Length: 632
Image (cartoon, rainbow, N blue to C red; front, top):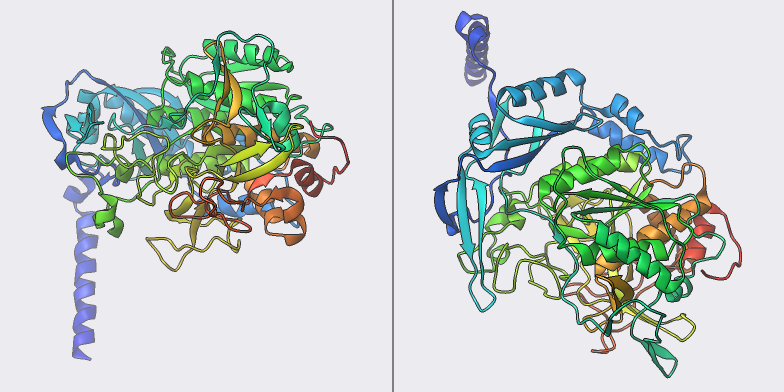
């Protein structure tokens, strides 16, 4: 009893001290507390060469996220508008409605922008919901305002493929005044960036010019090898002639130059006798330099794949930033989400490793640092996910779907910026079980890859999971509501083993293989037989095919696709009508296709999700528009 009484007296005494301090003139004049935004320092900086403070005039762009007031309410409404049994089904929010209902209070957002401007930063843009503020500054102004030293670094890989990369990075976490509600900052280093998921491929039969279509495929014993054409996919994936994407548009989220991409699209359309599709290029506010042409092959695949499987589209919208740096990618995603006239479906064929909290137990696991120093793990420091997560949830509440490539490194992700096997993409499984973002996020559709062989009439003869198709269990993202209870999704989160974590892929489509068997494309004015491949191809194919489904649905559309896909995918009665279950063996090994850690199995799996589409079945089950129209 004495101990309890003593405890009560101690607490009371503390309370009196706190109250007295709050009432004193000194406390009243004290500045507001400053709060650090954690998970914002690159892992492994101690192993890089530190050249000291970066030049003060070096420009920096930051994307600053503010916490929205009601994430629980957002999720509840998201579930409701996608539930056929709910009166709110398919009553998606407009951009203005979302901002009014869930946006950051204007007073708080204005306080943040005033503070940023007072610190010498230029406010480039503020999102419709006032939750994303993009600013430009210099090393001097950013460092002073956020109290972060910014240094120049270099990291060098070992081995024959070694290279040196220089970059800027903050050495401590940034801090903000308390009460502003800042939840994330992106752009304090120049190392982290998305990478295009077009990997190294053996281009089969590059052609000079784009004249009449030559016969590229070799067919033996009823099975053809070589490039797959748009017509092949109309047949193999059961795409009905009645619904070709009428009234729908597809967005491509990219970066850099677009003039060459448009020229290649026109040549591709002429090559295959497809309609000339209207294209609108949309740049985020404040972006000016679009000279980067390094992503041309990627954007060629995206535009040509998405449009050719939906020849009735009303148009393509290219949301292109300056580059694939994390702040610019956030800006592009936000521009698409905030556009009240944006298409209902988009494709993003780039990625970086999913976010791994720096302070989590896994950060100390040797398996996640498999490369000898000096290397810098850009994956372990990724904090863009926290920003994209809220942007994509807003898009889903607006009835929009982003299809994201699951990656081309199998059941791993390139954790290092430079390493013995490279830090880029393509046909190398680094062994570390980390998934690719944005595919790993809960509010996008992750698309895996398959190898498809067709017959002379374009029909599917064989299809199996691609060995380098990205897929697996995320480490820290709990399975979203639409995925819970799906047979095959069972692996627990590292952070909380009591929860099942999100699994990817959700669905899959043609990716080709390392020797070709991809999609026929035109790039840099040349016809390339079977050269379009990887999950960079799979994602835009699904964006185009989903536009066909949306054209059948009419009205407000079906919303964020994963709710509908998991609803029919979990139902045994509809699954076989709507999906081809990718369980075939890899012809090279005679074993079930495996992407490193995960095999293809009946039903949903961590390589191909539910599998590839039987589009006529999906349209019938999701829209009740059933018919026997021949595929096109």
